[in-house]
Length: 428
Image (tube, rainbow, N blue to C red; front, side, top):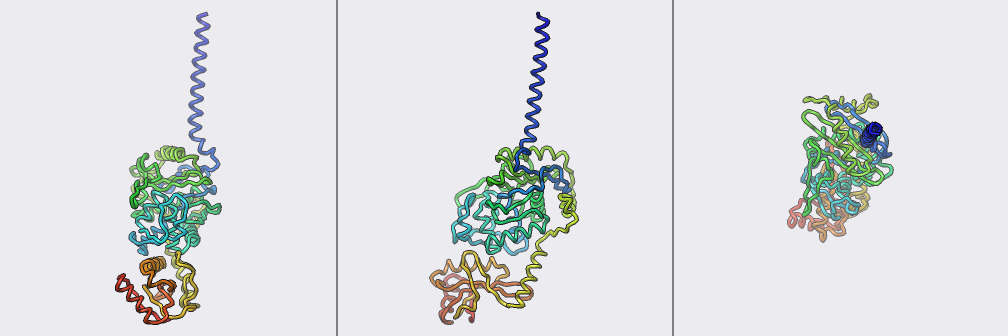
Protein backbone atom coordinates (compact mmCIF):
# COMPACT_ATOMS: atom_id res chain seq x y z
CA UNK A 1 0.00 0.00 0.00
CA UNK A 2 2.78 2.37 0.91
CA UNK A 3 4.72 1.41 -2.22
CA UNK A 4 1.70 2.12 -4.45
CA UNK A 5 1.22 5.46 -2.70
CA UNK A 6 4.89 6.30 -3.24
CA UNK A 7 4.68 5.51 -6.98
CA UNK A 8 1.46 7.49 -7.40
CA UNK A 9 3.01 10.38 -5.55
CA UNK A 10 6.03 10.38 -7.86
CA UNK A 11 3.82 10.26 -10.94
CA UNK A 12 1.68 13.12 -9.67
CA UNK A 13 4.74 15.17 -8.81
CA UNK A 14 6.31 14.59 -12.23
CA UNK A 15 3.03 15.39 -13.97
CA UNK A 16 2.70 18.58 -11.94
CA UNK A 17 6.18 19.69 -12.96
CA UNK A 18 5.44 18.93 -16.60
CA UNK A 19 2.24 20.97 -16.52
CA UNK A 20 4.06 23.84 -14.80
CA UNK A 21 6.83 23.73 -17.43
CA UNK A 22 4.29 23.71 -20.25
CA UNK A 23 2.45 26.67 -18.74
CA UNK A 24 5.69 28.56 -18.35
CA UNK A 25 6.67 27.77 -21.94
CA UNK A 26 3.29 28.87 -23.26
CA UNK A 27 3.60 32.10 -21.28
CA UNK A 28 7.02 32.81 -22.78
CA UNK A 29 5.79 32.00 -26.30
CA UNK A 30 2.75 34.15 -25.64
CA UNK A 31 4.94 37.10 -24.81
CA UNK A 32 6.81 36.79 -28.10
CA UNK A 33 3.77 36.10 -30.28
CA UNK A 34 1.05 38.25 -28.70
CA UNK A 35 2.23 41.30 -30.61
CA UNK A 36 2.43 39.50 -33.94
CA UNK A 37 -1.07 38.12 -33.39
CA UNK A 38 -2.30 41.69 -33.56
CA UNK A 39 -3.36 42.49 -37.15
CA UNK A 40 -2.03 46.06 -36.86
CA UNK A 41 1.38 44.96 -35.63
CA UNK A 42 4.58 45.54 -37.60
CA UNK A 43 8.17 45.93 -36.46
CA UNK A 44 11.74 46.32 -37.60
CA UNK A 45 15.11 46.64 -35.88
CA UNK A 46 18.11 48.13 -37.71
CA UNK A 47 21.79 48.16 -36.77
CA UNK A 48 22.49 51.88 -36.83
CA UNK A 49 26.20 51.34 -37.53
CA UNK A 50 25.79 49.08 -40.54
CA UNK A 51 22.18 49.44 -41.72
CA UNK A 52 21.66 45.68 -41.45
CA UNK A 53 18.13 44.53 -40.65
CA UNK A 54 18.38 42.50 -37.43
CA UNK A 55 14.67 41.75 -37.04
CA UNK A 56 11.52 42.39 -39.03
CA UNK A 57 7.85 41.47 -38.99
CA UNK A 58 5.71 42.77 -41.86
CA UNK A 59 8.13 45.71 -42.34
CA UNK A 60 6.58 46.69 -45.71
CA UNK A 61 2.91 46.31 -44.77
CA UNK A 62 0.89 49.52 -45.06
CA UNK A 63 0.23 51.14 -41.70
CA UNK A 64 -1.14 54.46 -40.42
CA UNK A 65 1.72 56.60 -39.04
CA UNK A 66 -0.34 58.63 -36.53
CA UNK A 67 1.98 61.14 -34.82
CA UNK A 68 5.10 59.50 -36.26
CA UNK A 69 4.14 61.88 -39.08
CA UNK A 70 5.62 64.70 -37.02
CA UNK A 71 9.10 63.26 -37.52
CA UNK A 72 8.85 64.36 -41.15
CA UNK A 73 7.37 67.71 -40.11
CA UNK A 74 10.43 68.20 -37.90
CA UNK A 75 12.75 66.91 -40.65
CA UNK A 76 11.62 69.71 -42.98
CA UNK A 77 11.78 72.29 -40.19
CA UNK A 78 15.32 71.17 -39.27
CA UNK A 79 16.27 71.42 -42.94
CA UNK A 80 15.14 75.05 -43.02
CA UNK A 81 17.11 75.78 -39.85
CA UNK A 82 20.26 74.08 -41.17
CA UNK A 83 20.11 76.09 -44.40
CA UNK A 84 19.74 79.35 -42.46
CA UNK A 85 16.30 80.13 -43.89
CA UNK A 86 14.89 80.22 -40.35
CA UNK A 87 16.30 80.58 -36.85
CA UNK A 88 15.10 79.21 -33.53
CA UNK A 89 13.85 82.71 -32.68
CA UNK A 90 11.77 83.06 -35.86
CA UNK A 91 8.09 83.46 -34.98
CA UNK A 92 5.35 81.61 -36.84
CA UNK A 93 1.84 83.01 -37.14
CA UNK A 94 -1.03 80.88 -35.80
CA UNK A 95 -4.04 80.73 -38.11
CA UNK A 96 -7.62 79.83 -37.16
CA UNK A 97 -7.12 76.51 -38.95
CA UNK A 98 -4.09 75.66 -36.84
CA UNK A 99 -5.73 76.79 -33.60
CA UNK A 100 -8.79 74.63 -34.29
CA UNK A 101 -6.89 71.33 -34.48
CA UNK A 102 -8.09 68.63 -32.05
CA UNK A 103 -5.91 67.37 -29.16
CA UNK A 104 -3.22 66.65 -28.43
CA UNK A 105 -2.53 70.37 -28.66
CA UNK A 106 -0.75 73.26 -26.99
CA UNK A 107 -3.85 75.49 -27.06
CA UNK A 108 -2.45 78.21 -29.33
CA UNK A 109 -4.73 81.17 -30.01
CA UNK A 110 -5.52 82.27 -33.54
CA UNK A 111 -3.58 85.44 -34.37
CA UNK A 112 -0.79 84.68 -31.91
CA UNK A 113 2.82 83.81 -32.70
CA UNK A 114 5.12 81.03 -31.49
CA UNK A 115 8.91 80.81 -31.74
CA UNK A 116 10.47 77.86 -33.52
CA UNK A 117 12.42 76.81 -30.43
CA UNK A 118 9.07 76.32 -28.68
CA UNK A 119 7.63 74.61 -31.76
CA UNK A 120 10.36 71.97 -31.59
CA UNK A 121 9.78 71.37 -27.88
CA UNK A 122 6.01 71.11 -28.33
CA UNK A 123 6.24 68.64 -31.23
CA UNK A 124 8.81 66.42 -29.50
CA UNK A 125 7.14 66.22 -26.09
CA UNK A 126 3.47 67.17 -26.34
CA UNK A 127 3.07 66.05 -29.98
CA UNK A 128 0.87 69.11 -30.43
CA UNK A 129 -1.36 69.05 -33.52
CA UNK A 130 -1.98 72.81 -33.53
CA UNK A 131 1.78 73.37 -33.61
CA UNK A 132 2.26 70.93 -36.49
CA UNK A 133 -0.40 72.72 -38.54
CA UNK A 134 1.28 76.06 -37.74
CA UNK A 135 4.57 74.79 -39.16
CA UNK A 136 2.82 73.56 -42.30
CA UNK A 137 1.01 76.79 -43.05
CA UNK A 138 3.95 79.07 -42.37
CA UNK A 139 6.35 77.08 -44.54
CA UNK A 140 4.11 76.04 -47.42
CA UNK A 141 1.06 78.29 -47.25
CA UNK A 142 -1.39 75.51 -46.46
CA UNK A 143 -1.34 72.13 -44.78
CA UNK A 144 -2.22 70.37 -48.04
CA UNK A 145 0.75 71.93 -49.81
CA UNK A 146 3.02 71.06 -46.91
CA UNK A 147 1.82 67.44 -47.03
CA UNK A 148 2.82 67.29 -50.70
CA UNK A 149 6.20 68.70 -49.74
CA UNK A 150 6.49 66.00 -47.06
CA UNK A 151 5.69 63.27 -49.58
CA UNK A 152 8.26 64.58 -52.05
CA UNK A 153 10.85 64.65 -49.30
CA UNK A 154 9.88 61.10 -48.32
CA UNK A 155 10.52 59.90 -51.87
CA UNK A 156 13.87 61.71 -52.03
CA UNK A 157 15.19 59.86 -48.97
CA UNK A 158 13.96 56.43 -50.05
CA UNK A 159 10.56 56.26 -48.30
CA UNK A 160 8.85 54.82 -51.36
CA UNK A 161 5.79 53.45 -49.54
CA UNK A 162 4.82 56.58 -47.62
CA UNK A 163 2.23 59.23 -48.48
CA UNK A 164 1.48 62.18 -46.20
CA UNK A 165 -1.80 64.09 -46.16
CA UNK A 166 -1.28 66.35 -43.14
CA UNK A 167 1.51 67.55 -40.87
CA UNK A 168 0.24 66.07 -37.61
CA UNK A 169 -0.80 62.47 -38.25
CA UNK A 170 -4.46 63.06 -37.47
CA UNK A 171 -6.67 60.37 -39.07
CA UNK A 172 -6.68 60.28 -42.86
CA UNK A 173 -7.25 56.99 -44.66
CA UNK A 174 -4.88 58.01 -47.46
CA UNK A 175 -1.96 58.75 -45.14
CA UNK A 176 0.09 55.55 -45.09
CA UNK A 177 3.60 54.38 -44.27
CA UNK A 178 5.53 51.24 -43.30
CA UNK A 179 7.75 50.22 -40.42
CA UNK A 180 10.73 50.14 -42.79
CA UNK A 181 10.04 53.66 -44.07
CA UNK A 182 9.77 54.99 -40.52
CA UNK A 183 13.10 53.35 -39.70
CA UNK A 184 14.62 55.11 -42.72
CA UNK A 185 13.21 58.45 -41.61
CA UNK A 186 14.44 57.93 -38.05
CA UNK A 187 17.91 57.07 -39.32
CA UNK A 188 17.99 60.11 -41.60
CA UNK A 189 16.81 62.70 -39.12
CA UNK A 190 19.33 61.54 -36.49
CA UNK A 191 22.16 61.59 -39.04
CA UNK A 192 21.27 64.68 -41.08
CA UNK A 193 20.55 67.03 -38.19
CA UNK A 194 22.48 65.87 -35.11
CA UNK A 195 22.49 69.36 -33.61
CA UNK A 196 18.70 69.56 -33.72
CA UNK A 197 17.92 65.86 -33.23
CA UNK A 198 19.22 66.20 -29.67
CA UNK A 199 15.81 67.72 -28.90
CA UNK A 200 14.29 64.22 -29.05
CA UNK A 201 15.95 63.57 -25.68
CA UNK A 202 13.87 66.34 -24.07
CA UNK A 203 11.97 64.91 -21.11
CA UNK A 204 10.09 68.04 -20.06
CA UNK A 205 9.05 71.08 -22.05
CA UNK A 206 7.81 74.26 -20.40
CA UNK A 207 5.58 76.69 -22.25
CA UNK A 208 3.88 79.55 -20.47
CA UNK A 209 2.88 78.37 -17.03
CA UNK A 210 2.65 74.70 -17.94
CA UNK A 211 5.23 71.93 -18.23
CA UNK A 212 4.70 68.92 -20.48
CA UNK A 213 6.23 65.47 -19.99
CA UNK A 214 7.52 63.64 -23.05
CA UNK A 215 5.12 60.89 -24.18
CA UNK A 216 8.06 58.57 -24.89
CA UNK A 217 8.29 56.42 -21.75
CA UNK A 218 11.54 54.74 -22.87
CA UNK A 219 13.38 58.00 -22.17
CA UNK A 220 12.78 57.33 -18.48
CA UNK A 221 13.06 53.55 -18.37
CA UNK A 222 15.50 52.26 -21.00
CA UNK A 223 19.20 53.06 -20.82
CA UNK A 224 20.70 54.74 -23.88
CA UNK A 225 17.42 55.96 -25.40
CA UNK A 226 17.85 59.07 -27.58
CA UNK A 227 14.19 59.33 -28.63
CA UNK A 228 12.49 59.60 -30.99
CA UNK A 229 8.65 59.58 -31.30
CA UNK A 230 5.37 58.03 -30.21
CA UNK A 231 2.05 58.01 -32.04
CA UNK A 232 -1.52 56.84 -31.59
CA UNK A 233 -4.86 56.89 -33.32
CA UNK A 234 -7.62 54.33 -33.07
CA UNK A 235 -6.87 53.11 -36.59
CA UNK A 236 -3.09 52.89 -36.13
CA UNK A 237 -2.80 51.53 -32.62
CA UNK A 238 0.18 52.55 -30.49
CA UNK A 239 3.33 53.32 -32.50
CA UNK A 240 6.90 54.01 -31.40
CA UNK A 241 10.22 54.66 -33.08
CA UNK A 242 13.41 54.45 -31.00
CA UNK A 243 17.05 55.36 -31.39
CA UNK A 244 19.15 53.72 -28.67
CA UNK A 245 22.91 53.79 -28.15
CA UNK A 246 24.91 51.68 -25.72
CA UNK A 247 28.66 51.96 -25.94
CA UNK A 248 29.54 51.77 -29.62
CA UNK A 249 26.34 49.96 -30.52
CA UNK A 250 23.35 51.75 -32.05
CA UNK A 251 19.88 50.40 -32.79
CA UNK A 252 17.01 52.00 -34.71
CA UNK A 253 13.73 50.22 -33.98
CA UNK A 254 10.08 50.67 -34.94
CA UNK A 255 7.02 49.08 -33.36
CA UNK A 256 3.60 49.81 -34.89
CA UNK A 257 0.07 48.80 -33.94
CA UNK A 258 0.47 48.14 -30.22
CA UNK A 259 -2.72 47.54 -28.24
CA UNK A 260 -1.62 49.88 -25.44
CA UNK A 261 1.30 52.16 -24.71
CA UNK A 262 2.48 49.75 -22.03
CA UNK A 263 2.45 46.65 -24.25
CA UNK A 264 4.05 48.64 -27.09
CA UNK A 265 6.86 49.80 -24.80
CA UNK A 266 7.33 46.27 -23.49
CA UNK A 267 7.58 44.93 -27.05
CA UNK A 268 10.13 47.63 -27.92
CA UNK A 269 12.25 46.74 -24.90
CA UNK A 270 12.02 43.03 -25.80
CA UNK A 271 13.20 43.66 -29.36
CA UNK A 272 16.02 45.93 -28.24
CA UNK A 273 17.20 43.46 -25.58
CA UNK A 274 17.10 40.61 -28.08
CA UNK A 275 19.04 42.45 -30.79
CA UNK A 276 21.68 44.43 -28.89
CA UNK A 277 23.90 41.31 -28.58
CA UNK A 278 23.69 40.94 -32.39
CA UNK A 279 24.55 44.59 -33.14
CA UNK A 280 27.96 45.63 -34.43
CA UNK A 281 30.15 47.59 -32.00
CA UNK A 282 31.81 50.10 -34.30
CA UNK A 283 33.44 53.45 -33.60
CA UNK A 284 33.32 54.20 -37.31
CA UNK A 285 29.96 53.84 -39.02
CA UNK A 286 29.53 52.84 -42.62
CA UNK A 287 28.68 55.75 -44.95
CA UNK A 288 25.02 56.70 -44.79
CA UNK A 289 24.42 55.63 -48.41
CA UNK A 290 25.61 52.09 -47.61
CA UNK A 291 23.53 51.89 -44.43
CA UNK A 292 20.40 53.08 -46.21
CA UNK A 293 20.95 50.53 -49.00
CA UNK A 294 21.23 47.67 -46.49
CA UNK A 295 18.02 48.79 -44.80
CA UNK A 296 16.12 48.12 -48.02
CA UNK A 297 18.02 45.75 -50.34
CA UNK A 298 15.16 45.66 -52.87
CA UNK A 299 15.54 49.40 -53.40
CA UNK A 300 19.34 49.55 -53.16
CA UNK A 301 19.71 49.91 -56.93
CA UNK A 302 17.57 53.07 -56.94
CA UNK A 303 19.31 56.38 -56.44
CA UNK A 304 18.62 58.14 -53.16
CA UNK A 305 19.05 61.88 -52.71
CA UNK A 306 20.31 62.92 -49.35
CA UNK A 307 19.49 66.62 -49.14
CA UNK A 308 16.76 68.98 -50.29
CA UNK A 309 19.16 70.66 -52.73
CA UNK A 310 17.84 68.82 -55.81
CA UNK A 311 14.22 69.47 -54.89
CA UNK A 312 15.01 73.13 -54.24
CA UNK A 313 16.85 73.40 -57.54
CA UNK A 314 13.92 71.92 -59.46
CA UNK A 315 11.60 74.33 -57.73
CA UNK A 316 13.78 77.31 -58.72
CA UNK A 317 13.88 76.13 -62.34
CA UNK A 318 10.09 75.94 -62.44
CA UNK A 319 9.85 79.41 -60.95
CA UNK A 320 12.28 80.76 -63.54
CA UNK A 321 10.12 79.40 -66.36
CA UNK A 322 7.05 81.04 -64.86
CA UNK A 323 9.00 84.25 -64.44
CA UNK A 324 9.78 84.35 -68.16
CA UNK A 325 6.06 84.45 -68.90
CA UNK A 326 5.02 86.70 -66.05
CA UNK A 327 7.71 88.66 -64.27
CA UNK A 328 5.71 89.19 -61.14
CA UNK A 329 2.93 87.19 -59.63
CA UNK A 330 0.98 87.28 -56.41
CA UNK A 331 0.62 84.36 -54.01
CA UNK A 332 -2.92 83.00 -54.10
CA UNK A 333 -3.27 82.23 -50.44
CA UNK A 334 -1.43 83.21 -47.32
CA UNK A 335 -1.79 81.99 -43.75
CA UNK A 336 -5.18 83.39 -42.80
CA UNK A 337 -4.62 86.75 -44.54
CA UNK A 338 -7.22 85.98 -47.16
CA UNK A 339 -7.24 85.13 -50.85
CA UNK A 340 -5.30 87.56 -53.03
CA UNK A 341 -5.82 88.40 -56.67
CA UNK A 342 -3.52 90.19 -59.04
CA UNK A 343 -2.13 93.49 -57.83
CA UNK A 344 -3.29 95.15 -61.04
CA UNK A 345 -6.92 94.88 -59.97
CA UNK A 346 -6.24 97.57 -57.35
CA UNK A 347 -5.71 101.29 -57.79
CA UNK A 348 -3.77 103.88 -55.82
CA UNK A 349 -0.49 103.55 -53.99
CA UNK A 350 1.11 100.77 -51.97
CA UNK A 351 3.43 100.70 -48.99
CA UNK A 352 6.06 98.00 -48.94
CA UNK A 353 7.40 96.77 -45.59
CA UNK A 354 10.13 94.54 -46.99
CA UNK A 355 11.30 91.97 -49.54
CA UNK A 356 12.37 88.55 -48.30
CA UNK A 357 13.80 85.40 -49.93
CA UNK A 358 11.58 83.26 -47.69
CA UNK A 359 7.84 83.57 -48.26
CA UNK A 360 7.00 82.52 -44.72
CA UNK A 361 8.97 85.48 -43.35
CA UNK A 362 7.10 87.85 -45.69
CA UNK A 363 3.78 86.47 -44.47
CA UNK A 364 4.88 86.78 -40.86
CA UNK A 365 5.82 90.42 -41.37
CA UNK A 366 2.45 91.17 -42.94
CA UNK A 367 0.61 89.46 -40.10
CA UNK A 368 2.67 91.20 -37.44
CA UNK A 369 2.33 94.62 -39.07
CA UNK A 370 -1.40 94.26 -39.61
CA UNK A 371 -2.00 93.28 -35.98
CA UNK A 372 0.11 96.15 -34.61
CA UNK A 373 -1.23 98.86 -36.90
CA UNK A 374 -4.81 97.72 -37.44
CA UNK A 375 -6.30 101.23 -37.24
CA UNK A 376 -3.91 102.58 -39.86
CA UNK A 377 -4.02 99.63 -42.23
CA UNK A 378 -7.69 98.73 -41.93
CA UNK A 379 -9.17 98.39 -45.42
CA UNK A 380 -5.77 98.15 -47.11
CA UNK A 381 -5.27 94.74 -48.65
CA UNK A 382 -2.08 92.84 -47.70
CA UNK A 383 -0.48 90.87 -50.49
CA UNK A 384 2.80 89.32 -51.56
CA UNK A 385 4.41 89.99 -54.93
CA UNK A 386 7.10 87.55 -56.02
CA UNK A 387 10.00 88.52 -58.28
CA UNK A 388 13.38 87.10 -59.22
CA UNK A 389 16.76 88.79 -58.89
CA UNK A 390 20.10 87.15 -59.76
CA UNK A 391 18.51 83.70 -59.71
CA UNK A 392 16.90 84.17 -56.28
CA UNK A 393 13.17 84.54 -55.68
CA UNK A 394 12.11 87.37 -53.38
CA UNK A 395 8.72 88.13 -51.85
CA UNK A 396 7.61 91.74 -51.55
CA UNK A 397 5.31 92.26 -48.57
CA UNK A 398 2.90 95.11 -49.28
CA UNK A 399 -0.35 96.83 -48.28
CA UNK A 400 -2.42 98.20 -51.18
CA UNK A 401 -5.22 100.65 -52.01
CA UNK A 402 -3.98 103.98 -50.64
CA UNK A 403 -5.87 106.69 -52.50
CA UNK A 404 -2.97 109.12 -52.73
CA UNK A 405 0.75 109.33 -52.12
CA UNK A 406 -0.01 111.54 -49.11
CA UNK A 407 -2.22 108.95 -47.39
CA UNK A 408 0.34 106.21 -48.11
CA UNK A 409 3.11 108.40 -46.69
CA UNK A 410 1.12 109.10 -43.52
CA UNK A 411 0.63 105.37 -42.93
CA UNK A 412 4.29 104.66 -43.70
CA UNK A 413 5.49 107.41 -41.34
CA UNK A 414 3.29 105.96 -38.59
CA UNK A 415 4.95 102.56 -39.03
CA UNK A 416 8.39 104.16 -38.95
CA UNK A 417 7.90 106.58 -36.06
CA UNK A 418 5.44 104.77 -33.80
CA UNK A 419 6.30 101.13 -34.41
CA UNK A 420 9.94 101.42 -35.54
CA UNK A 421 9.20 99.51 -38.77
CA UNK A 422 10.73 100.07 -42.16
CA UNK A 423 8.54 100.83 -45.17
CA UNK A 424 8.53 102.68 -48.48
CA UNK A 425 5.75 104.14 -50.64
CA UNK A 426 5.40 102.42 -53.99
CA UNK A 427 3.78 103.48 -57.25
CA UNK A 428 0.80 101.43 -58.37
